[in-house]
Length: 234
Image 1 (cartoon, helix red, strand yellow):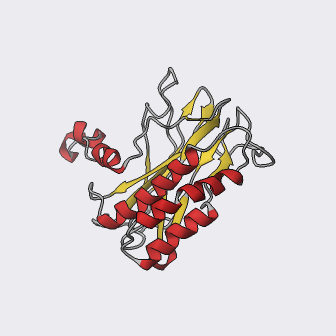
Image 2 (tube, helix red, strand yellow; image 1 turned 90 degrees about the vertical axis):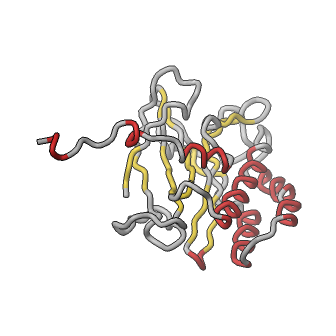
Protein backbone atom coordinates (compact mmCIF):
# COMPACT_ATOMS: atom_id res chain seq x y z
CA UNK A 1 0.00 0.00 0.00
CA UNK A 2 1.29 3.46 -0.82
CA UNK A 3 -0.36 6.65 0.31
CA UNK A 4 0.28 10.34 0.92
CA UNK A 5 0.33 12.31 4.18
CA UNK A 6 -1.34 15.70 4.51
CA UNK A 7 -0.38 17.09 7.91
CA UNK A 8 -0.06 20.88 8.17
CA UNK A 9 1.14 20.99 11.78
CA UNK A 10 4.40 19.06 11.47
CA UNK A 11 6.46 22.27 11.38
CA UNK A 12 4.63 24.75 13.62
CA UNK A 13 6.90 27.71 12.81
CA UNK A 14 5.89 27.65 9.15
CA UNK A 15 3.38 30.33 8.18
CA UNK A 16 2.00 28.57 5.10
CA UNK A 17 0.40 25.13 4.61
CA UNK A 18 2.90 22.36 4.18
CA UNK A 19 3.31 20.42 1.00
CA UNK A 20 3.51 16.83 2.21
CA UNK A 21 3.09 14.78 -0.92
CA UNK A 22 5.90 12.44 0.05
CA UNK A 23 5.63 8.77 -0.77
CA UNK A 24 4.79 6.68 2.29
CA UNK A 25 5.43 2.97 2.23
CA UNK A 26 3.17 0.86 4.43
CA UNK A 27 4.42 -2.70 4.53
CA UNK A 28 2.54 -4.17 7.43
CA UNK A 29 1.00 -6.92 5.33
CA UNK A 30 4.32 -8.29 4.15
CA UNK A 31 5.10 -10.38 7.20
CA UNK A 32 2.87 -11.58 10.05
CA UNK A 33 2.95 -9.39 13.12
CA UNK A 34 5.17 -6.63 11.80
CA UNK A 35 6.80 -4.89 8.90
CA UNK A 36 9.95 -5.12 6.86
CA UNK A 37 11.49 -1.79 6.05
CA UNK A 38 10.64 -0.25 2.68
CA UNK A 39 9.38 -3.40 1.02
CA UNK A 40 6.28 -3.65 -1.13
CA UNK A 41 3.55 -5.61 0.67
CA UNK A 42 1.16 -8.18 -0.66
CA UNK A 43 -2.28 -6.89 -1.52
CA UNK A 44 -4.03 -8.00 1.65
CA UNK A 45 -5.84 -6.36 4.53
CA UNK A 46 -3.85 -5.47 7.64
CA UNK A 47 -4.28 -7.81 10.58
CA UNK A 48 -4.67 -6.86 14.24
CA UNK A 49 -0.99 -7.54 14.89
CA UNK A 50 0.33 -5.32 12.12
CA UNK A 51 2.13 -2.02 12.58
CA UNK A 52 1.95 0.81 10.08
CA UNK A 53 5.15 2.77 9.42
CA UNK A 54 4.86 6.27 7.96
CA UNK A 55 8.10 7.92 6.83
CA UNK A 56 7.42 11.32 5.34
CA UNK A 57 8.95 14.76 4.79
CA UNK A 58 6.83 17.93 5.05
CA UNK A 59 8.45 21.03 3.59
CA UNK A 60 8.36 24.71 4.50
CA UNK A 61 9.66 27.47 2.21
CA UNK A 62 11.85 25.03 0.28
CA UNK A 63 13.31 23.47 3.44
CA UNK A 64 12.28 19.94 4.34
CA UNK A 65 12.12 17.71 7.37
CA UNK A 66 12.05 13.96 7.87
CA UNK A 67 9.85 12.17 10.36
CA UNK A 68 8.72 8.61 11.06
CA UNK A 69 5.96 7.35 13.31
CA UNK A 70 4.44 3.89 13.74
CA UNK A 71 1.00 2.89 14.91
CA UNK A 72 -1.17 -0.23 15.14
CA UNK A 73 -3.33 -1.04 12.13
CA UNK A 74 -6.08 -2.06 14.56
CA UNK A 75 -6.04 1.29 16.37
CA UNK A 76 -4.87 -0.28 19.64
CA UNK A 77 -1.28 -1.14 20.54
CA UNK A 78 -0.75 -4.75 21.51
CA UNK A 79 1.46 -5.37 24.58
CA UNK A 80 4.48 -6.45 22.53
CA UNK A 81 4.13 -3.40 20.28
CA UNK A 82 4.08 -1.09 23.30
CA UNK A 83 7.04 -2.92 24.77
CA UNK A 84 9.29 -2.37 21.77
CA UNK A 85 8.10 1.08 20.70
CA UNK A 86 8.29 2.43 24.25
CA UNK A 87 11.88 1.25 24.55
CA UNK A 88 12.88 2.90 21.27
CA UNK A 89 11.12 6.08 22.39
CA UNK A 90 13.00 6.12 25.69
CA UNK A 91 16.28 5.64 23.85
CA UNK A 92 15.40 8.42 21.40
CA UNK A 93 14.63 10.73 24.33
CA UNK A 94 17.88 9.81 26.07
CA UNK A 95 19.82 10.78 22.96
CA UNK A 96 17.76 13.87 22.15
CA UNK A 97 18.16 15.49 25.55
CA UNK A 98 21.94 15.13 25.33
CA UNK A 99 22.43 16.75 21.91
CA UNK A 100 24.36 19.99 22.31
CA UNK A 101 27.22 21.86 20.65
CA UNK A 102 30.73 20.77 21.47
CA UNK A 103 29.93 17.06 21.72
CA UNK A 104 30.48 14.57 18.90
CA UNK A 105 27.95 12.12 17.42
CA UNK A 106 30.02 9.37 19.03
CA UNK A 107 30.13 10.86 22.51
CA UNK A 108 26.39 11.50 22.83
CA UNK A 109 25.31 7.86 22.27
CA UNK A 110 27.87 6.83 24.88
CA UNK A 111 26.18 9.19 27.36
CA UNK A 112 22.77 7.85 26.35
CA UNK A 113 24.01 4.29 26.80
CA UNK A 114 24.84 5.02 30.42
CA UNK A 115 21.44 6.68 30.95
CA UNK A 116 19.68 3.62 29.53
CA UNK A 117 21.27 1.22 32.04
CA UNK A 118 18.46 1.62 34.62
CA UNK A 119 15.85 1.47 31.83
CA UNK A 120 17.21 -1.90 30.72
CA UNK A 121 17.27 -3.06 34.33
CA UNK A 122 13.61 -2.24 34.98
CA UNK A 123 12.20 -3.37 31.63
CA UNK A 124 10.68 -6.84 31.66
CA UNK A 125 10.91 -8.09 28.12
CA UNK A 126 8.38 -10.66 27.01
CA UNK A 127 10.91 -12.51 24.83
CA UNK A 128 14.68 -12.99 25.00
CA UNK A 129 14.99 -11.86 21.36
CA UNK A 130 13.32 -8.54 22.28
CA UNK A 131 15.81 -7.96 25.07
CA UNK A 132 18.69 -8.84 22.76
CA UNK A 133 17.41 -6.37 20.15
CA UNK A 134 17.01 -3.64 22.76
CA UNK A 135 20.51 -4.15 24.11
CA UNK A 136 21.93 -4.07 20.59
CA UNK A 137 20.14 -0.77 19.93
CA UNK A 138 21.65 0.79 23.03
CA UNK A 139 25.09 -0.64 22.33
CA UNK A 140 25.28 0.35 18.66
CA UNK A 141 22.98 3.37 18.53
CA UNK A 142 20.84 1.81 15.83
CA UNK A 143 21.71 4.56 13.35
CA UNK A 144 20.41 7.24 15.71
CA UNK A 145 22.55 10.01 14.19
CA UNK A 146 21.31 9.85 10.63
CA UNK A 147 21.53 12.01 7.50
CA UNK A 148 21.73 15.81 7.22
CA UNK A 149 18.45 17.57 6.37
CA UNK A 150 18.09 20.84 4.49
CA UNK A 151 16.97 21.68 0.97
CA UNK A 152 16.81 17.91 0.40
CA UNK A 153 15.59 15.22 2.77
CA UNK A 154 18.96 13.48 2.54
CA UNK A 155 21.04 16.60 2.10
CA UNK A 156 24.68 16.84 1.10
CA UNK A 157 27.58 17.33 3.47
CA UNK A 158 28.35 15.83 6.86
CA UNK A 159 28.05 16.94 10.46
CA UNK A 160 29.98 13.95 11.82
CA UNK A 161 33.57 15.13 11.17
CA UNK A 162 33.91 16.81 14.56
CA UNK A 163 31.94 18.26 17.46
CA UNK A 164 28.40 19.39 16.76
CA UNK A 165 27.93 23.10 16.09
CA UNK A 166 24.92 25.38 16.33
CA UNK A 167 23.10 25.26 13.00
CA UNK A 168 23.67 21.58 12.26
CA UNK A 169 20.36 20.04 11.13
CA UNK A 170 19.95 16.28 10.86
CA UNK A 171 17.68 13.32 11.42
CA UNK A 172 17.57 11.45 14.74
CA UNK A 173 16.47 7.97 13.72
CA UNK A 174 16.99 5.09 16.19
CA UNK A 175 16.08 1.72 14.68
CA UNK A 176 15.48 -1.57 16.44
CA UNK A 177 15.56 -4.86 14.54
CA UNK A 178 14.28 -8.25 15.65
CA UNK A 179 15.49 -10.39 12.73
CA UNK A 180 14.03 -13.58 14.20
CA UNK A 181 10.54 -12.12 13.76
CA UNK A 182 11.27 -9.77 10.85
CA UNK A 183 10.39 -6.76 13.02
CA UNK A 184 11.66 -3.25 12.39
CA UNK A 185 10.79 -0.51 14.90
CA UNK A 186 11.82 3.14 14.68
CA UNK A 187 11.16 6.78 15.52
CA UNK A 188 12.50 9.64 13.43
CA UNK A 189 12.64 13.39 13.97
CA UNK A 190 14.47 16.35 12.45
CA UNK A 191 16.50 18.38 14.92
CA UNK A 192 18.69 21.48 14.87
CA UNK A 193 21.62 22.06 17.19
CA UNK A 194 21.25 25.40 18.98
CA UNK A 195 23.72 27.49 21.01
CA UNK A 196 22.50 25.81 24.21
CA UNK A 197 21.18 22.41 23.13
CA UNK A 198 18.77 21.15 20.52
CA UNK A 199 15.43 22.05 18.94
CA UNK A 200 13.19 19.29 17.64
CA UNK A 201 11.54 20.67 14.50
CA UNK A 202 9.01 17.83 14.44
CA UNK A 203 8.10 17.97 18.12
CA UNK A 204 4.50 19.00 17.35
CA UNK A 205 3.80 15.45 16.19
CA UNK A 206 2.76 12.95 18.88
CA UNK A 207 5.50 10.70 20.22
CA UNK A 208 3.98 9.12 23.31
CA UNK A 209 2.14 5.91 22.50
CA UNK A 210 -1.19 6.95 24.00
CA UNK A 211 -1.08 10.21 22.05
CA UNK A 212 -0.33 8.35 18.80
CA UNK A 213 -3.16 5.94 19.52
CA UNK A 214 -5.56 8.85 20.09
CA UNK A 215 -4.67 10.37 16.71
CA UNK A 216 -5.15 7.03 14.95
CA UNK A 217 -8.65 6.77 16.39
CA UNK A 218 -9.68 10.20 15.12
CA UNK A 219 -12.01 10.53 12.19
CA UNK A 220 -10.04 10.94 8.97
CA UNK A 221 -10.69 12.30 5.50
CA UNK A 222 -12.52 9.13 4.44
CA UNK A 223 -14.93 9.49 7.36
CA UNK A 224 -15.47 13.21 6.79
CA UNK A 225 -15.71 12.86 3.00
CA UNK A 226 -16.99 9.35 2.16
CA UNK A 227 -16.31 8.04 -1.37
CA UNK A 228 -18.94 8.88 -3.94
CA UNK A 229 -21.18 5.86 -4.67
CA UNK A 230 -20.54 4.39 -8.14
CA UNK A 231 -24.11 5.09 -9.26
CA UNK A 232 -23.61 8.79 -8.61
CA UNK A 233 -20.37 8.89 -10.59
CA UNK A 234 -22.19 7.75 -13.69
